[in-house]
Image: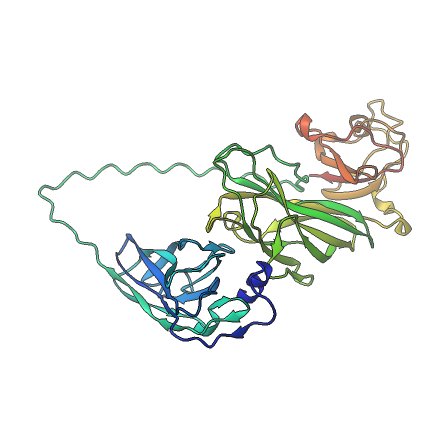
Length: 434
């Protein structure tokens, strides 16, 4: 990670070697905390005078998770974390990566860790990996020693009470909300309203589609909203999951202003891709993170879901930025040579006894139905009038002029419905429920 990160940040040139200077040392630091409370340790690099080029580090500390857990990591003055620290309180490791663009003092605090005391005892702070590959600058690793640290956890002192206070009444827990019934299909979300100042940023999974065998793109971005108090992300680390039976990923391209660090990892067998990047300028209120190029495989819809916590995706000034994730939707249509599935065709000229004899009846098998509209051009309300609109959640029609999916749902709010006309020959995805 250190090599790729520094290369992306234009800090390193050529192939990393190892500098021959001696005297630089990494000291893990120490702290003393009370069980159930918090305390701080600071990791410091004592830089040899010859190592003035120190401008990046990748340090992994090991600790005993039975004694302590990591609450937060803060960079030392002049350092920028890229990306946010990776904390594993189950295994007992914390990885911190950072860069800087000036000369670090000879006694250089690189990061501080806020610890939570778990149980009395002492946890050693040791280095996972090679100290000689933990510091770098100007195309070379910096030879370094390492001094272990420790966190000592003491038992809390229970004061002797002068009087026995009455036990406060236990508050009644708030009732858990009843689980809502999952719909048979979720329509692709529209771009959400701009988040209010102070509200979490909104990460948009993106969407798109094409016929089987074709390539197309989707864009994953973040809606930051407005307001001077909102932090700007300068790094992201995101893993999205998809259905490789519907479409596969051919490549990813970083959004304007972003540099991948390291290059994305695509797994078209498991159906995941991972991308992390950094930037050194502020984003616009809507900030594209990366663009995905897809190869359409099999007709059908799929969602792009986030693996992990949305609050850990965006990094800003060495801290994670609160965020929520809106899934993206990809829809693949049949190739023209495949025709349309006969079993999913509307029944021409059928009616429902309500005077709609000229409107085809749409199949409403629970789930997604793929069909071609064989009636005349009409509004979506008219197109559904001969069927059972109570069973139909939403229909999607591809608009080739704009390259977007248009939708209509009988129970959706008006502002979400942007399908005005169903035309003869239109390919329709219809979601129905029992």
